[in-house]
Image (cartoon, rainbow, N blue to C red; front, side):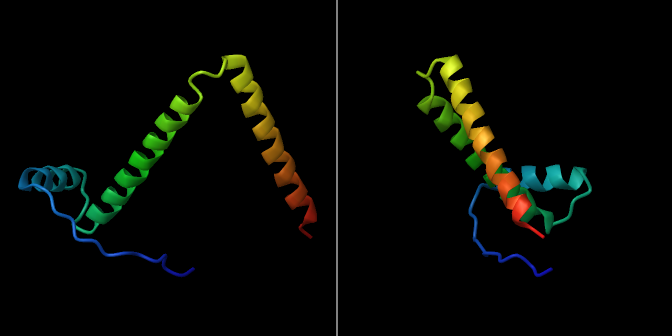
Length: 90
């Protein structure tokens, strides 16, 4: 399996945050190279939470029963599509 593509960034932040992060990772037995992994995961979680909050806001006025019906229909569509794809495979 090949290495995923990566992008090199230069990040500027306060000494206090830098020390806090390095102390946090060090206390858990992590090394300097783990900073990139930690930051990547933090960014992924931040994007996820902002997406969830935006979605909640977009559907705030939808009645719960109607929202559940929409969710059930979407899940059924995805499952049907998945099963069709699985059936096509030899």
